Image (cartoon, rainbow, N blue to C red):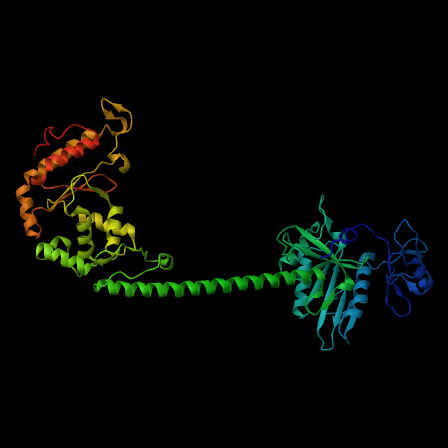
Length: 528
């Protein structure tokens, strides 16, 4: 990206450096330091203004740029076009004659009804490309009208803004990676925003300027400030649609192509990863289904890789301990009670959140957490989920499974088999501790335990009053008289099993109240 020529391009030099041959009408450019060569042919040259016939002199020296000067030190031309505008047209015509395809014609101000573009190129097939140089402050409606007329004629047009219309932003610096910034006229913003090709031109340096956005991409007219790079017109190429393609435009196009290719590669890689992940997920899901079928049929749990959970976004697979399958557990329960207790529910019913028949997961919880447990044994719903995994029961949705387990345990309450205890103000890990500063022997944060213990004793007493009915319901459900009810101990779900009266219920209650740091078991209401 050429930035070395930017400052000369945006400079304030106005000396005349273009002329035309009197006989051939071909443009002539006075290069820097070439005044001596121009003097040899200056009599064959004339001013660019059509109605100016004043002789020119070639002026050299070391303190200023070599240039042409009228003998009377002024141009009497009255065409209405500025010297810079005429020089830009001469520069375009000279370059196009050298750069367009063979047999193309280059005409200055050829009529394309109802307009006369500054320069028009017509190729062998009759296709035309127009070039418009704008040094004056055109209004946007005027540009829109001219653009509409050329569009109607089917002629693409390149707009070239005179270099004096661009103003460098104060304090800007120029490096290859950060071209300088320039203020962009509103007309140029509208042309770029409309997606029309627009460049800048400086006939004194024979350069074409390219506007860029802040990220060095195509300028889209969104901001009144743009980055700017200048290229020699000899390094540019002609294009039938765009008019002129600068090396900077080529770099932008290459960057866009590379970005598009990179985005396509990333998209393809992401698609491959998605397909591989989907294939792995389906494979793992199929393996899970086969394992579940074998497990339900009584077979042992298969060897599932530890990382299988990563392959199943829907079902979380844990490696359970090598315990019994449902068939083995069912056989144990029937041997114990003669039949499967109705308390466990039907064998054909399932929960969407627990991949096992209802009777299976309820029996698994009873076996691990309730059967032959003392009053000191407590467990949370997370412990219940772990118990299910030990029995090869998968839990795809732990939250819903917790709700199902809690609902089943709570459903034992009206049967008189479960006593519910809730204490909402203390976190579970504080429930059985008394390490804080005590007031009158009661921990500061646990003083409300008095209400809790009173409720505990009242409910135990009420349970005792329903003993006969409770035993009748136990017999009805097919459970032995030694089955332990459980108690809901706090609001975070902690279930505590109780032993029957005849197996030391008073002693269990005494130990329970002592661990809470309150009273004794012989308080009123505790002797039931």
